[in-house]
Amino acid sequence: MSFMEDMSSDLGEARQSKLESFLFSCELSSKVPFYTFQGDEEEDLEHFLELRTVCLGEGVKEESNVVEVTAMNHQGKTISVPIANLHISCLPMVSLGEFELKAPVTLRLRAGTGPVTVSGLHLIASQVEDLDLSDEEDEDDDEDDEEEEEEITPIKPAKKKQKQ
Image (spheres, rainbow, N blue to C red):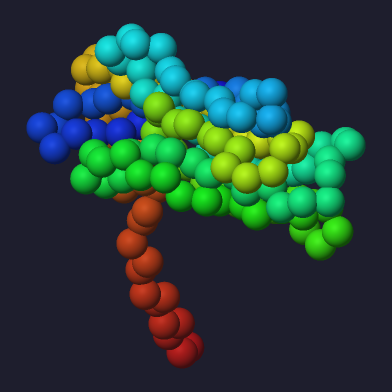
């Protein structure tokens, strides 16, 4: 899935933002206890991980499986937060909604042996400057405004009939 958004910066330049999304999944277990999600190092791209579900896999033991996420907070400091504590008898799956984190993100099986599957979306945002597009859009908007003005005609009061 991909879609386009138009965004304008504070400087008045027209920018086109493109957002692409791809399915993401990883399995954590005692053999592979962590997974680090990193995006490409290209300058114009930003990578995000949108976590949706955390689910116990087939053959899981009767134990708690705690999944923890490590990412940067708003101050640029790395923090770790448990996002799910799953148990086969009471909570085999949790839905996280649209829990979005900027890369790099590390998912870790903090407790338990798994397997635990974490799934969601890999989002890639790119900014593309397009000054010509903004000029054309402005012209189109002006033409639309003129057409709307021409279509609106003032209402004239009805003339009274004279008695004969």
